[in-house]
Amino acid sequence: MSNAERRLSELGFQLPRPAVLPPGVRIPFSWVRVHGSRAFASGHGPLAPDGTMAGPVGQVPSEVSLEQAQSAGVLALLSMLSSLKQAIGSLDRIDAWLTVTGFVNAAPDFELTTMVLNPASELLLEVFGPEVGAHARTAVGYSTLPFRLPVVISAELEIAGATA
Image (cartoon, rainbow, N blue to C red; front, side, top):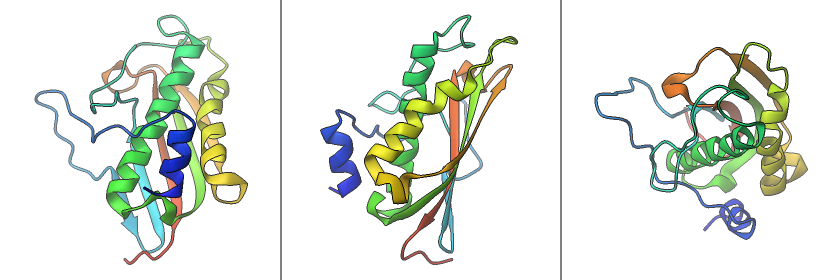
């Protein structure tokens, strides 16, 4: 178990299993693309521990509360961490979180998209520390997201010992 996974466990979190796609859905891309010393994580939504999509779904705040959306953001981050572990072998290979981009399924007048992503950013800092976990971030609202997910997160990271 990596130090990052140990820290997640201490905080009461667990990485979900790999994503289980709905019937008939296929993805022609990689969840994580490693090139040189960079890892590019595709958009990840919230997953339950078994790898299925976690609810609730819908727009924030009309169908999904701010608190539910914040929890979904943390679950989306855990989903991404699971994919990163599969792609690079150990989360301890992460040298720096460079950017995190959050997409919020937002009602037209919802202005608090940055607040939806704050718990996920705070978790990165708690797990990876201020040197590795510090990141630039964007949190924007969209009228809908795939499968009506409330939050999708993507990221770019620097990793150690990578090859092109």
